[in-house]
Amino acid sequence: MKKIIGYIFFILITAICFMSLGCESNKSKNLHKTKIGNFILWTVLDSKTEESTDIFKGDDKLIKELYPNGKYTSYINYFVLKMPQKICLIDTGNGEGNIKESLEAMGLTLEDIDAVYLTHIHKNHMGGLLKNEKATFPNAKIYISFGEDKAMENKKDDDPSKILYKKIEKAYETKIITFRSDGEDSKDGLTSMASYGHSGGHTIYKIKSKNEVVYILGDIFQQITLQTKNPKISSTTDEDQERAVSARQDMLDLLETEEDTVKCAGNHIDFPGIGKIEKVKDNEYKFTLDS
Image (cartoon, rainbow, N blue to C red; front, top):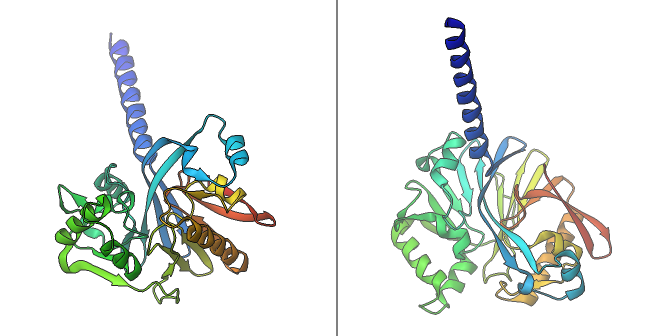
């Protein structure tokens, strides 16, 4: 009888352990950790949806070849950067995911975030700044490029992005800081670079520690496999499609001249949202996703 009870107890404990492992696995499915010199960059998957390829224009043959059913998976990522002197977010997603739980899995709290740097102020990049119309990150300063802030002023008052932005301004008050994306190397390892087109003040961020570099590309790419094969393919989500194509080409040209060990990360790149871009031939590139 004791043996039977002991056996049952063993089965129960084993089942609980497996269940715990499963929970841990599920928690980590939306997180990916990358080391950049002395920094740690976390990719957080906010959401993913199936979308129509109708948004892409410029090479119907290639679009049909890659996506014969007319659908592609659209990811929304944001990034958490742990630096020796501060902890910051680059974008915040729609706010549909559980930011608090994701940070806790990294050993952080909402109060630990010192700064949020926005690539631009579309809803799926700034939605996570609010929770019940209050500031999600009570101690954080919010950094927005001067160009993006000015572009927002010119939008109609009933524009959804502008309505949301006004609520964010109210929630964070004096903690919103505008800056010029001049591309000069910063002393702390995080540099902003103007890359207008997708929006009026779209900004990319260069993270550098030691000789390792990651470019956070924002929405330079809406679908990176497609738009590295043909960078001239535009998206209807770009506010200025011609300028967005030019910005994408400028970024690809910059990568060719970069001497450090370089990776690229993006808000709509397949999770984990980070990898390497290599030139295949004239104006055709290949993106390899990190495992």
